[in-house]
Amino acid sequence: PVKDHRCAAIMALSFHKGPTLDQLLKKGGSLSNVFGRVVCAQLVDVLAFIHSRAVLHRDIKPDNMIISGAAYELDEIWDEIIVESEVTDWSQYTKKWTLTMVDFGFARALTPDDMAANKAPSKAPPKKRASSGLDNSTRSGGSSIGASRKSLGRSISRAFNRQMSALGNRGYAAPEILEGVKPNSNHGALARGATGDDSVHLTNNLGPGISNYGMMVDAYSCGNTVRFAMTGVPPNQDIEKSIASQDSPKLGCCGGGGGKGKDGKPPRKVKYRSLDEIPKEAARLIDGLTQVDADKRTSIRQARMYPWIDNALSTDTPGQEVQYLSFTMEEEKPGGISATEE
Image (tube, rainbow, N blue to C red):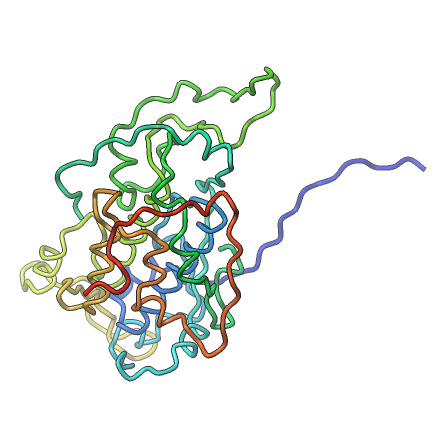
């Protein structure tokens, strides 16, 4: 019999209905303290995991996060129905609402060769501050990655910096990506190996623009996402001006007009909060993650150890220990806001 050698590569992914974090924020604005903390903690947890596998996402934004268990009719998503200080078992909420990171189209899996080529000088940060799933990453069992503090403190987050394609969403991308972009001479052509063959080297830069940056860009994007989640204000908008427009009788409040929705309730209006109105620990974390200077920025691994994040992920059952790739275990330089800093 004649064998049919035709074949196809198929990737099967689990289905997550949504909504996305972006849809929730556009629906009602700033999240409640409990729901927002659960979402932000799981976001940091997911990023800590992919960084431990030497993967740089480069497109972190609310539109790429699906929140299973959330629904527009659940008032506790936006309203302070659940008192944060009275929560003793966070696992009931991390099981109820789970975040899944999607769209790894811009992601880059770093290799030992990338580390060997880590000699590109970083561009000095601008003086002025910019205005401001992996299916297993959902933690459906309620336990976190359980990485030890020692291993989280040893990483390539700060040590790694090299020339890579300038990718990402302008509202969430770190300054070091946007600053100093230059044309890529290899754009539009196959990246040939040293032997001259036609094989494409997946870690070469094929985008039209390139910049010098490292894994700290994910931390900046994460910080802008946390800011949006807790204040309701997108990263490219001024918080105080947004609040002023919300309170102005002339400009009116965001959201639907009069009448009632399908549930008999009036349409939910988008609400904004200042950084002074959100939990102090959340505001400090946002400040650390969105530092313009990458050397002063809080890394994802530092954020994962932060009490506001770690305590929301801790359970009575210890999580499994992350097995870090050996070349990601270089000592991380001190910087950013420490987990215990007051």
